[in-house]
Image 1: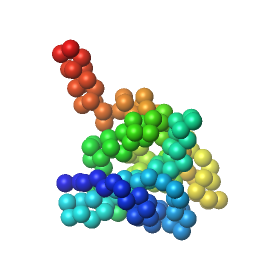
Image 2: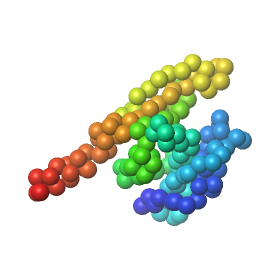
Image 3: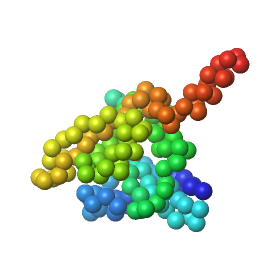
Image 4: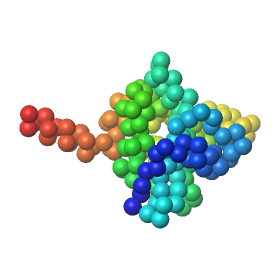
Length: 158
């Protein structure tokens, strides 16, 4: 069973930074983070929240996991995106991904992100993708279908 890990921002941020080649040495600076551990307690993946701009309601996310691990259940995804939208009051989350990271882009597409390909975002010979997700897109995501059904049933009962 996957278990979220809270309150260890520095450890989780360092773990995530080490898994992202473009970030290893630099790290993230001041941030918040959520980790995900497996049944044995081993840290499998994590999400780092940084560059929060409450005035406009945006925050940047970086995420990474150990290769070959399963760590993104529906419950974990809801936790990852509920934090910025409902915990921080953000209107939009922003994630940058290298254009050749097809697995990460596929996950973001399933969630409902909008993509903007940017030449040389990953350096002189590597393109990147700026991916954005608004609170409305998140709420309409297939990952919230159960919540929409529950809300509709609650409304009917009232």
